[in-house]
Length: 404
Image 1: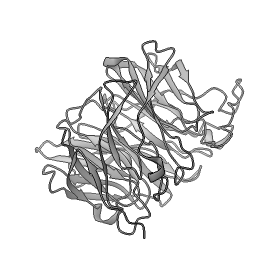
Image 2 (image 1 turned 180 degrees about the horizontal axis):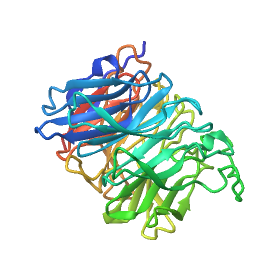
Image 3 (image 1 turned 180 degrees about the vertical axis):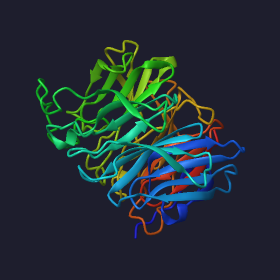
């Protein structure tokens, strides 16, 4: 069995919850402030059998599990969720195209002990695996990485695209617009984009983020197609503003795009998907977007010692970052970056000098008993700077704070 002693610098571990043995959490973590004054953390599971887990974190030193729901099918994953008020959206993706149950669920969570589905958008189809990731912060429009019944990719790896969904009536979500990388859909006039010669992850959207500072822009992590900024002023007809790709020569799988509006910068991550650093380097780039039509890479966030982490079990490299979600329970910083690096834990970077970002804190937990490795997957930071860190394999929820 893999073993490892906890490592920590400039952080304090406040508490841990193993989520009743179902500690496999995806990229969906969000905090709700309830009408009766409680603070409830919702987490989407990376794989079956569990769907959503809610934990009362009003007392962060003593998190208490409230509810844990079941997926309708063993082939589904929930993976991603977003909350506005007492409504929650959940993404549902299948293992293989054409399997049932895929799409976007809408839930009333006014009672955290009993989330109640009030709407569902079916996004299944012969070539669709449904919705992988969603972003929803304004209460009106959700931004999805998804397949659909009427979308046939030329290559099955290119099956998810950008879709805008009107959810002003949460019981009846409606598509209002979509965009896909030219050449990836059957029937496109453009040629299909070249495959990555070493690690072909696909020319599909991982996630598209839209912020209140720039509601007419979608910042898209388009996997092997790199970074794409879209003009979505006309939501029925998104248009490309700019495109930057570094794969090849680097491995692809662009995962997250985080604009830092006050500084005209953008932070971009690539997901490590192979064990023991096989697909390294999977990095976090700093980009200058003063001219949004021409993003320029100006620096990278420093990585932990590769000789060390390559030789530890599990994935090593970048994954996700806290995405500065707007909202009353959300932290905001345009200098500090909170990042998850799988077996290298959660790490915090000061990007005050974007040409030379510095690591200022980290936490790598013990490998959970019975788990093959650490898989620190996502981090949510509340308005008080408290970090809610989750593992994709078995570790569950870690609650931490910075001590610097």
